[in-house]
Image (tube, rainbow, N blue to C red; front, side):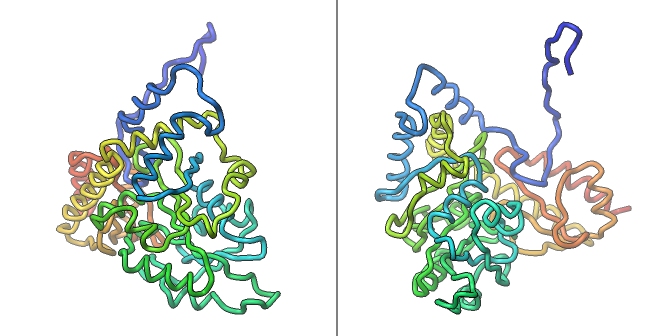
Length: 355
């Protein structure tokens, strides 16, 4: 809204907290400082800048060997570009029915990239070798979209985390069948701290061919990074990134954010805090009569069951999602969730449960 003199009114933010998504959180102050630091002078556009070159070196150090590094605008873009680079036009990608690429990306892999998704049942949100084999058949049969790759999310859409052994088993199964392997790592940091392992052991050492390295849900303003781990099976990332409108002309600002996340382990510190807050929330609600946890809390998501009418009352004040059923809820914690936020939320839950 503008006043009569044409100047805009100042924008203010509401001092409320939500548990619907870790995307609700703002930008980490250390990331904002990094953006200001690189906002000086000129740099070559489209990724040929010094900051993006530094990000490449940081990623090489993180994974312990040469990798391809391609910043993009968002997670959907990262997944679509990555999957396109490991599949051919007649091939399909195997994923779970609840996979983010299948349920929450508006059909982008199929609409934008023309990739058929073969969906299979999951176990606690996870893909299994048996499920891969159930869809990886009829090779050479012209009437069947040929399986070309698998994709897994770490952590999964149901909040579970694949162990390193599980990732390795999936990669081995896929490679045995001639399939390539993509990991959707929108919440990769939460999984890394949950397993207390290195990102290399979870990805490149476990057989992942290409990775969507998440940043937005973990404190960045916007952006993810596609990391090519096995160049032998990945082709055309740079061309898909451009044609799918994911090439940032002022790349230094995307790269600077991820450099900030990797500096002093900010990406791990932020994720560890979010995971700890989820554990704290789970412990607080577990003691409330009438509420049961629907699954273990592996990362920064809490799934719980509670009466549907209580859910409705709570949602008049607090933002969170129901999940597949009116009595199944998902609560997400983020890098800036505070214990007091949870205490206030739990107090309202107790009041609502008391009727």
